[in-house]
Image (cartoon, rainbow, N blue to C red):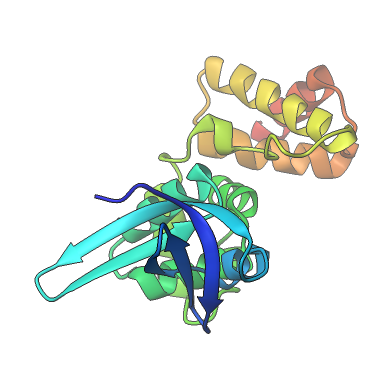
Length: 200
């Protein structure tokens, strides 16, 4: 199984890129978001790879981060969601946006992806709401400054509410409402207090 490719971009198409690794060209499928983020042809790239082997085909799916790959696996585990739909969702939503949408059971956000109807979107948020790792809730580690502090506050508040016995999905919804009411720079204590009010 191939888990990562490090090489150079050697061409691209509508939904794939060719990655040259030591003279061997690997055709890697990916989301529009991933393909847009690739460097220019000839430049170095490292991609997390999900390998799918069937009797009649071998497909490689590429991702810019392990978090994106884990989301692809989660999406593929939902009934009615294949590779095309999973990549369509990842084309319009980043890993963090998808985490927020599922945690808040925001099916409208998920259904923004082409080919994803209300029923499929509902199934995705229902089946994945308890599978989202807590580390996926909030902003990515690449974000700095005020946004990172806001994300840290949300993570701490979420942890506090779940420790009080609330389900993570309910707590996430309450904290999203609390942040909307208090602003992105709200302190952990304020988020917890407002979140408890929302849960009441």
